[in-house]
Image (tube, rainbow, N blue to C red; front, side, top):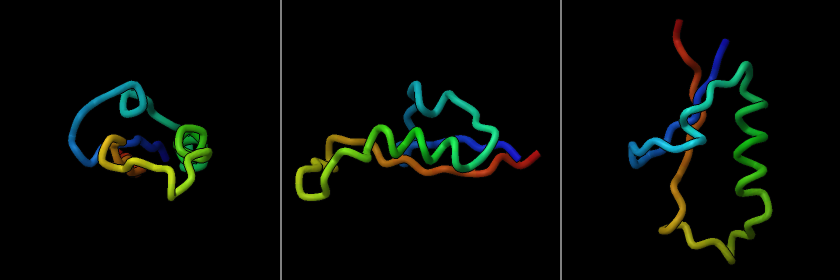
Amino acid sequence: MKYRITRHDGEEDEITAQEFENYDDAYELLEEIYGATCCSDADYEERPYYEIFELKG
């Protein structure tokens, strides 16, 4: 199975352009980006919301 990451606003970027061999690889990328952001420090209105999905093939 292969996985992609999408943005809820429908925009494309360097994250959504990637394809992953497994869910964990996609999750690790998002964790690298957002893992250090504390919930109380986050400005969610300025950050896109990403979702991982399985490619149907």
